[in-house]
Length: 274
Image 1 (cartoon, helix red, strand yellow):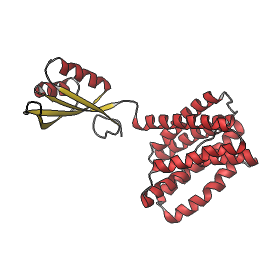
Image 2: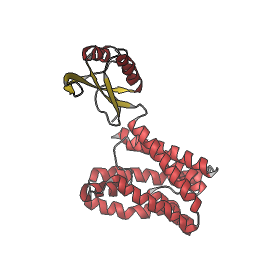
Image 3: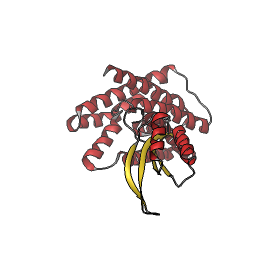
Image 4: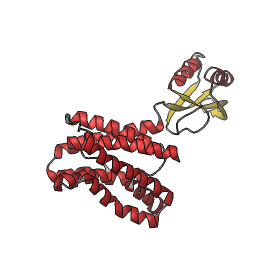
């Protein structure tokens, strides 16, 4: 638990730096309540830190009586850290003002790293996440749909103070942030679910086990072109291993067949993608 809280705190400090020093400093709109607070701040001059607190408070009060207490605890701690760090960063760290494209990319990169660190802890990271989980479990609304609607409304709300161009840069920032977060969670290694139909199934399986150090599964199949029984080999390989098995199978110069499809979720020994 202490380790999880530590990484949440680290992630939220990075997130606060991206929010205050890059996004707000360059008139980009963040997603979620943070983005809405920034919009209201630019319209009214109200303190961002206080806006974050008052906007989230009703959600936490509602969720306390309506939802999982463990998730509320982590979401509350996570949001508390972010709000606390926003005050610290705004007061002691200088804004990093740059051109909009650089701000969109760097803000998305830093925010994505923060999001990846927090989401790896598998907890709700704020009031928006609690609502998303509640709608998914109780109403059948997917988390992706919820965030798409919420973030579109928040980002487009910046048109109120006449900054239409910044909407585009804010959307670019959101895309970069989402891509970086996904990479940190899923991993940078690409894995493939490989199916091989060949008469040389024993040799190929031996190569997979001895040279590639991977497992393989046999499934009995039939080649409909000549109505001949063949053994289908299935294995999960990374990109380099896929190239190696492709070249090995091609060396037989027969009618062996390989089909590979990208796999994004692998759980088990020998793989670090979840």
